[in-house]
Length: 380
Image 1: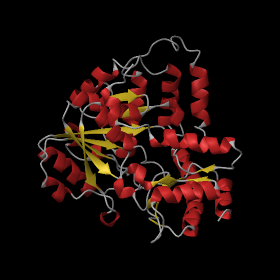
Image 2: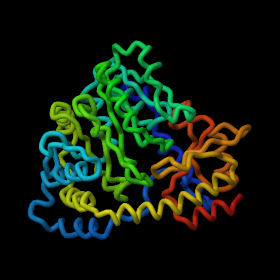
Image 3: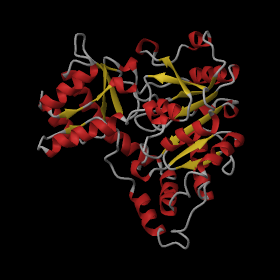
């Protein structure tokens, strides 16, 4: 059977193939330390786990659930956004829970893109934006992010381009993979740019609560809701990556369009997971403080490892990664990480998997226990 032509537009996800290689080395007995992927190694809170356990005996817990999620989950998301971001969202019409925010990238793209529509994508940025755009027949158009400009787009330069076919623009602040943040003024300029050019702005925002003193949502910008959608996730903030709980927020019209796609793609999220998500969203400040203590300690050690390699980095970046610039004269990023992998048994992500502007950079994940980071340092 010949596969669909759309498969020719994408490759298997980098981490899918590279981690097979890493697992192969581990099977050979290599003591690999995996610093490549941002999969939290910490557990959700005891309250979340207890809620999940208790909920599975509730009446109707094992039946199909609503495509829109439990009303109490949507209410918990709305309360969370009000409390953390000072953003008012209507639970019944402006919130759609997702099985992880990654599926939201597909649902949004299917809801708004026709074949040939163009999509502005950050370089560097999350690779899934490009692959999903290709899969649905859109045309990826990258815009540059550079360290010297704080990993923020030059909107004046971008405005000089022909944007007549552009329908969507992906951004992610705090930025993945660099950890750069955007000021409220910068977010306002992005919303204004989207309005002026009739573009739907999409902010992917899963890192606001990891080593971040000032969590922000683009929906806090006045008038943003009519021109902007925001994706968020419980994966990083609450150590629930495998639970697959995310959300998209925006105007009722935009959410209704996405629901048309989603309701044809799944049959609702498991009840127990939704109840656990509610408990997570109701976590007190002590949860966030404890999480940051762990990641702060790990980050200091990761800075030490980066120093050992002669790399430079931004100590003010947020999120669960350390984005590092390789020293002058170093090997290209992918060759560099392969050398470290095969000589030191340490896997680091090369910056190039996030786009051509990632050349010369590498990324460390903080989802590694302290003793393993110390062991990695000792190997050099």
